[in-house]
Each structure stands twice: as C-alpha cells, then as structure tokens.
Image 1 (cartoon, one colour):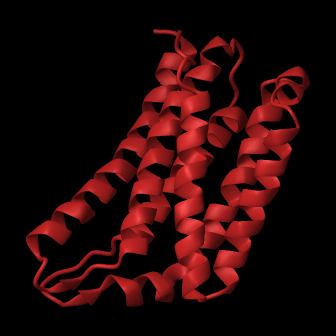
Image 2: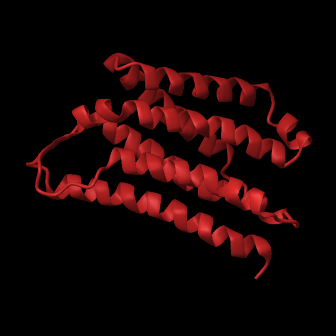
Length: 189
C-alpha cells in the first residue's frame, strides 16, 4: 500500500459518512412523511451536496501521483470532505418523533450552511494551486470566473432569506455541478 492509498482511506471515510448522513436523511423523509413538511429547495440541496461529495471522492484520485506527503497536505485534503459532511449534518438534523418543517429548518440554518459552502471554492483554488501553477493555469479563465461566482453566490445565500434567490441558486448550483461532473468524467482513464 502506498502513501496515497493509506491516506485516502480516512478521506474516503469522511466522504462516506457525509453520503450516509444524506441518504439516512432521505430515508427518514420517506419513513416519517406524515410528520415532515418537505421543501423542494432543501431536497435540491440534498442532491447538490450528495453530488459534491461523490465528485470530491472522484477528484481525490488526482492526488494519487503525489510522492511526498506531510501532515499539512493530508489535513488540507480532509478539509473539503469535512465541510461537505458538516453541510449534510446541517441539512439533516437528528430527529426523533417531533414534527419538522424542512422549509423552516432550511431558512433557520441557511447562514451556517452557505457560510461553510462559501469556503469550498476557496479550498478548491488552494487545491488546484497545490497541484502546480501550470495545473492552475490549465483550468482556464472560466475556472476563475466560476470560483468567484460560486463563492459570491454562496455568501449572498448566507446573507439573505429571499426565497426566490434560494430557489434560483439551488437550481443554478445543480446545473453547475452537473457541468463540472461532465468535464471530469475521465479523470481515472
């Protein structure tokens, strides 16, 4: 087992528990549907975070050529999965037999959710730079534009409770992440 294989195990576990949290949350929605008021924006962010977690695991493979590892680099690689896990926890709180309105829950917790989400594009920039400046430049100007856009839209989402904005941003982010996935289909080839 090489260093990447060893270190990627913990990162994969963090990603997996984030995915587990989302899938468990959806399972609870199905089981307790009479006690829960579903909100489609919340469900769309569930899908968005799920896709982000899966994409994060997929892109982790780009680090497999890294020969020298240190604790800082390893800790940095854990940062994005950890934040995504926290997003999944914010989306799906522990509930017992209480009734929950996911629209109310979403807007009660939107500041934390989107403040954490705003960190992800910044982490992506550092991740891209750590792979080398030529790798960063190879991403092209669209990369910089989308990083700034996602960061700004996330910050705005943290600051506003405007329902139209949140509906639009949830749909926009889904389209963005689907586009990003289509660009990164062949990383393992």
